[in-house]
Amino acid sequence: MNSVANETVEFELPYFKEPHWLEIVRLTLEFFIATLGIVGNVVVCLVITFQPQMQTVINFYIRNLAIADLGILLFSFPLTVIKEQDPYHWPLGEYFCRFLYPVNDIFYGVSVWSITLIAIDRYRAIVGGRIPKRNSLNFRSARWMILGVWIMSFLVISLPLYFVMTFIDQNSYIDCTPIWPSAERGNLGEMQQIYSIAIIVFWYVLPLTIIVGTFHSISVKLRVSTNFNRSIQEECNESESRNARKRLRERQNSRAKKLLTPVVIVFAVTMLPVNVFRLSVMYWEGISKHKYLWVFYNVCVIFVIANSSANFFIYSLVSDEFRQSFKRLICRNSNSTSRSTTDRTVRSPLHSPLNLSPTNLYPTNTDRQE
Image (cartoon, rainbow, N blue to C red; front, side):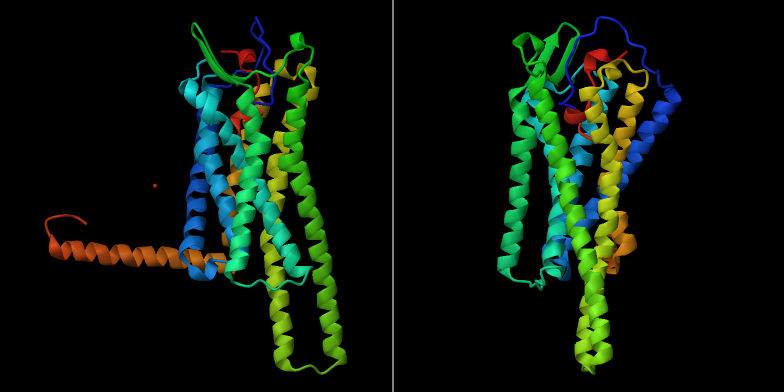
């Protein structure tokens, strides 16, 4: 990661040497998880974009989450593999290093804050009593919120890296790495520590605190509302239609909470190792020489890509609405392909009818044993 100091070590360090077969198994597992995540997130985007009944404010936030996860899996993850496999030879050139490499971290901020927006939207609907409406004002507001998340993530995460990213080309050693203010300047890495702490707070501690707080309020509200409606129904002989509307709203709110709860739990669990690793790099002086440093690093990579790949399967298992929409999309494409194949056969019978952020987690390159 970019938040890791860049100290030059003149001797080989006793890192655990990963057996070749284990490396193949690990990379195969990583690419398998990433491939599932790419397909799943693409399906989520297609369902929400092309099925009108799925175009709600909360689903706009879910689509934004899927887009951010696609950025992690298609952009950040390959860069992680490149840096991990050959840390002493950066193959993508100076332009990519200075101008594109810092941008990859933005996807992590957008991903977590999209989940936060979903939690806040559910809080406003359930606790605040706001009834969601499909109108242009709500959709316009959601788009502005999404744009704000992207801008905020760029300013907090990516912008500082443009001032420290350095392309190093010295003989056979080619690297793309941040050079933070050093001890010779009297800062003792203070700027790097400030940046690292800000990252931990911005994309883990603060959003998780907001999410947990909103979910606690939602749970309390749902429990109180359910008990109150039952007591009223017992004491008063309300009309059947009115009771039906109340029960329907309770079920909708409960389903929303049921959908978001596993998303939040998966995020909290899978992103915890990354942030623990980052703190260890900052405050554990001997970690750069620890035998199993790269084992810790690779575990963090697997957890991060699992976080970006899991949401599609959560939606499929928990949400009847998403599950039915996925089925409609698949059936429609199958029918369309079948009709298209038949038409081609009639016309032409002779032809037969898809950081983890390296700039924010990667250990010191020069400490790696070849």
